Image 1 (tube, helix red, strand yellow):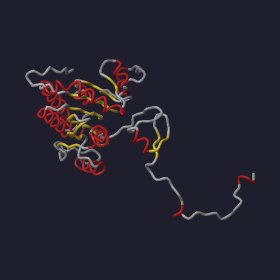
Image 2 (tube, helix red, strand yellow):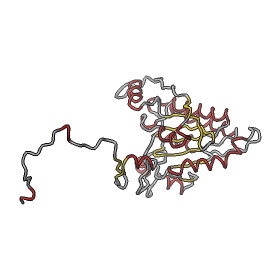
Image 3 (cartoon, one colour):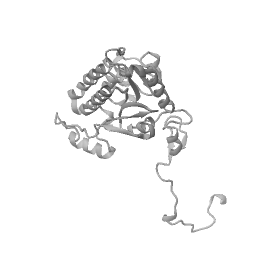
Image 4 (spheres, helix red, strand yellow):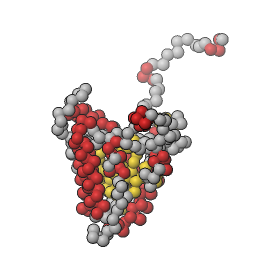
Length: 296
């Protein structure tokens, strides 16, 4: 077994000369385990080249993908949550908010902005799952409501990108009120004849699904996104039966009539542009002559 032994003794590489791969250069797909460079992964808009798995991305990436030149005007960026219930679990709610804001660089779980998509004006509100699970608190509801108001006042189509675990327990009833507030604002947007496109990404659950996420003139989703109200485990334990294969996936939801279509992220910008072009007559129509939009 001499071939297995080192012949030359004392070969030592100084620590400063050791070559290590820096973090963040490689991406490993969680589905098919294919390894690619992060540069290639970013070029494919954070999708897998082999199996097309769509990685979760945040508002910064969506804004870069959608807005021409990555240029936009952020709306209501300074809004932050209070502590109306003086909530404490393992730490006080204000401390949790401060720690999350420091770790993520975000003020809350949604950002809204106005910009152009292929030369067409668009207002976008996008949720960030990394901020307390994208939970919907009073600030999330207020920022979405204000974004809808901005779209209505300026007669600009509105796109909502949902990604949430549901209502924020630290705000209890205040969180649940946001379902009614955002839905009421969307009804006003509908009456004004302004198009509303709802895009559901992984995951979209709880009170977000039960309110604004499912009220679009067009409800669209990314491939493989988890979409539902209660989680699969809770439903299975409640009904005492095994659930269908791929239950609550975007494909399952589309098959059962709750989505209009599924869009690959690499085609998202162009398909949205085509959709907005088709809806443009409704967006610019006078309020008294604008066609009624559907709401579920």
